Length: 392
Image 1 (cartoon, rainbow, N blue to C red):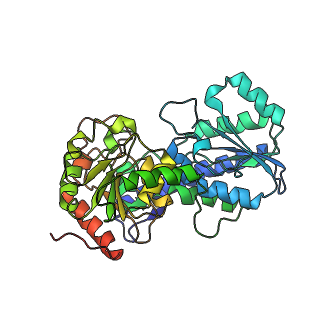
Image 2 (image 1 turned 90 degrees about the vertical axis):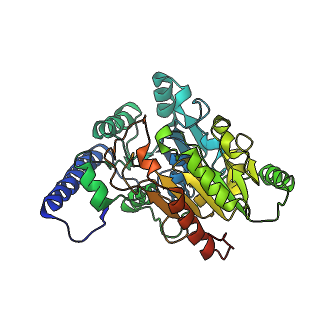
Image 3 (image 1 turned 120 degrees about the horizontal axis):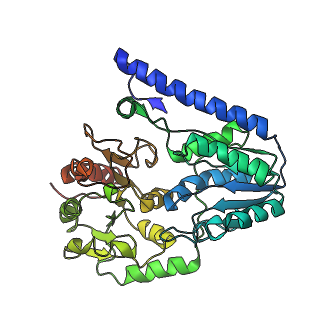
């Protein structure tokens, strides 16, 4: 986390000091516990990496996973995850990541606790590396350490980190920008002796059939030679969805000069119905795998997206992103990479900001982001890419 303003009112300066002090205390306790329970091992032969979550969580962890494979080149590395075939609406890591990064992927959702423990003990791992979720509670981190050390029987390990302080949230939102998830995981590795220099690498598993399917779909589109913009109107959480009417206004502005590709899952089919009647709009919702969606985005000049899994696909495949964020969570955590290629829109002055809720009745934070604001950011990115933009 870093300050976004040098001069703070005294009361907010005290609050920020308390937040940072609490964060440091939590992590001192975690690091001390980790140091007591786990030994160091510079040359492990068999490693268990633990990372949970959905497609966005998996993509954000890919650079760290790539660094681990590069550093422990000859080690037998297994991934323990719950993003797999046993859970609905979660994309399995097997479908995303390049073969060779992991020697095996274990989805614990399909295993009972006793079966999981038996398997982990039988594997006799030299080390566990915990790529912690940023919102993992303090007690869960301690529980995981105890489980891996005493129940799974792994004597070496690192990676536990506490990352979210829940008090003075409004002050945090105003004056703190949290480290994005990719950098946070890389920093954990760096602090534990695993080099992470260089650009982020996303080792996707891309097959010839993926290229072929995307090429066939593009060939079937009239005027397929003109520039394209991808739109991701859906999101797993309803409160992360920008109003469809706002997407419609943006599409009306661009659709005479660009093909518009709608990307998402089959669950988005009903949501995007109002958009299908606009000129040059083509829906691929439910027709493509995540990898194929990323390849299709590479044929686009820009992706306009909610805060959702395909947003991470877009920048990971090197496509400029305009991302519309709700105020549900702390700013910065899931943002696309900074540096000028991407833009983020997030409302200010929202009374219910940082609700951290899984439900929302009105999405006022998303409604405050107007189509005009989004069009301005899109035009700016398109201009940088030397793409003709429509006249206002």
